[in-house]
Image 1 (cartoon, helix red, strand yellow):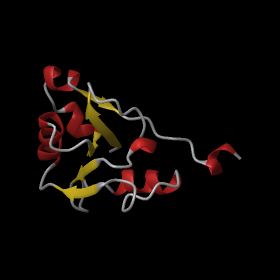
Image 2 (tube, helix red, strand yellow):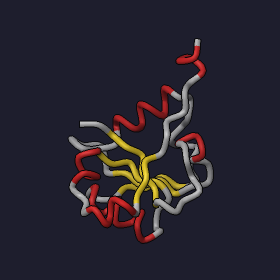
Image 3 (spheres, helix red, strand yellow):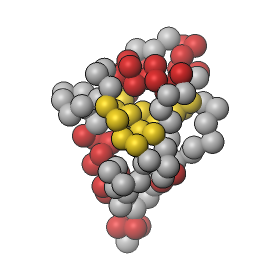
Length: 107
């Protein structure tokens, strides 16, 4: 199971390094929670607590995706399995954000 950072396909966001002043949504810590993405942010030196304007939690990954598509959240943290379960039409309306390379990874 892999984690993904997703946004609407028409969003100007391209990388998770651009999370400042965005609304980020995830599921609570659980079997399919956002632990993988939070760990990736930490490795890249990005605080998931202070970078976004708001961090909020939805009850399911489907709700996270729905909120992204409705424009109620800017970035969603979901599993690749949840993305794969979307219809082709919904998948075309989403894009995955790139992960920044941390300074440590460059050394």
